[in-house]
Image (cartoon, rainbow, N blue to C red; front, side, top):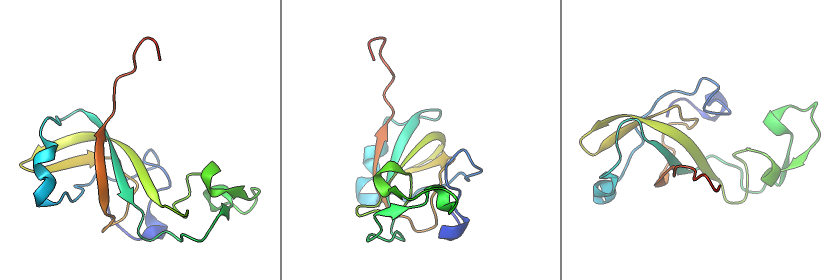
Length: 122
């Protein structure tokens, strides 16, 4: 998770870096069972978001019509949670390297969840 808000890729597949998200020591035991190669969802609090914005031009492209933030992936929204589907690349003690992730330095991690395999019925 690097750089400032303007430098962060809009989506992970658009050149986002790998990162070592910070996990508080008091909950690090909860990482047990995560393995290299697993896909996980890292839920972040987009702490630099503007929480009073309800409409935006998708991808900040002013040639596109305004849309409600709930119809976009904009970080600016009333409750700015970021959902990042990433792959576990490395595990070192109580730390996990993931990538690619479109977040900036200091972005707080709220939760980590496994990506569940799809069933044939889904």
